[in-house]
Picture 1 (spheres, helix red, strand yellow):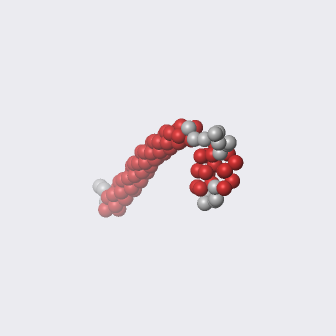
Picture 2 (cartoon, rainbow, N blue to C red; picture 1 turned 180 degrees about the vertical axis):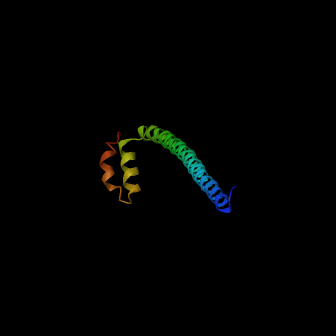
Picture 3 (cartoon, rainbow, N blue to C red; picture 1 turned 30 degrees about the vertical axis):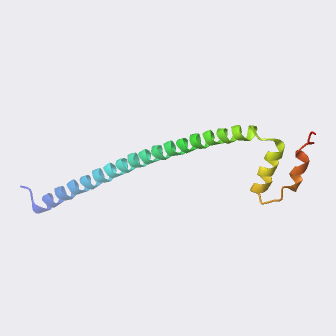
Length: 95
């Protein structure tokens, strides 16, 4: 006959098995969730990088059209410096 002690052992064994199975299931689910978050973050970074590259190409095209004087003025004003040094890049005025 099965005694009370045998029932307790069987119950503890089943509970321990359920705890281990739950822990494994939780860890696998947690790992998969982290992977999905990582993939999303990588996609966001790639999209931001592409956007920045396209903006740089647009800025480069605008800068290619500027004269040396205009580039000098743009750079010095951006740093809060006087633009007097750029005067030598104006060239000679034709009469």
